[in-house]
Length: 413
Image (cartoon, rainbow, N blue to C red; front, side, top):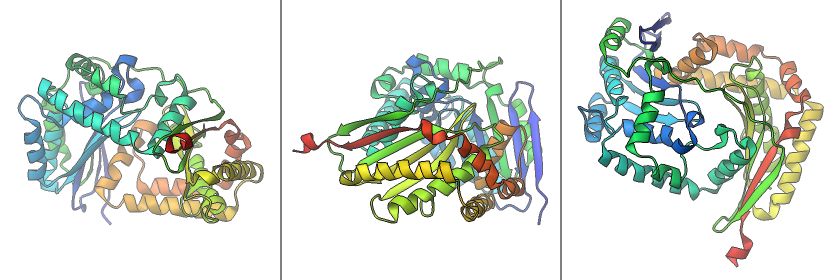
């Protein structure tokens, strides 16, 4: 098996570059991570991180949006981007000989022209996306639940923004956000697979980038847990949709792996405790729980879907099951199975450069170094059940918040 090599450099303007080189790989994956998301937006900028992600695909001073699309197609690239509460990520994969060209394409995109006609066109696209999610009751349950659970904390504002906030985003606000957050020292270029490290550095060292300066580092405030229950009724909704939130641990917390394994034992979609209590007996069609770590804090989150007539029974069983788990813990068999399942998933994703890309970036940004697949798998397999029991001893689900979106019977009548 070929030896992997870890490459890392910090350029004079603060840009970080990291790579996991595999000379035997048949492809190259390239990504650019901007450490910015909806959590960093000012109130008048709500939704701008996601909006800017869209606008970067509309071209720079040399290319139009059509030019960008044709350039990706000419490279045979598989590519996309996403925005979260904390990061915006642009990524793609190509054959090794096209790796540098893909990096050059991303580099140009991240200096968007922000032409008025592009802003108006893409505004309509984002508004359609907001409308699409408004038609999804599961998404609405989470959006409203997160807003209540995280309260005034920016983490609960939602990534897309609202119709009103997106309509208010003009070129000046978008450009101001780009100037403030897309600085070189807030970006990470990441490569995995078969790439040319020397050529990568030579290109990045001569490529123009945003004006020098240190990006503003916002204080990461953890939300105050708000236990309780809320809900709403909505016309056109035919089933009950439940979103649940409870305190977890942050990305930098050494207990993060135990939290992931614990969540898997409780909420795996076809073998967790909630599955056996709710889905197998047929009173819910979906019952999943996971752990979502963020910078400075984390949360356990769950989704349940059921017939509205079964809602009370479902909520009673959820309460009983979470109480039982906190009281009795999880079995050694369930813990070992969770370890094997997570280890298998990590291994399968790690077999392709594209599958490794975000893991390499997150590893460096969250823990200060790149962790190989085997190192992470070993961490999964050596994390003892006692670590999960210690988390349960803190009784995190006592502080849970449950939001229910259910049919509006009056409107239906």
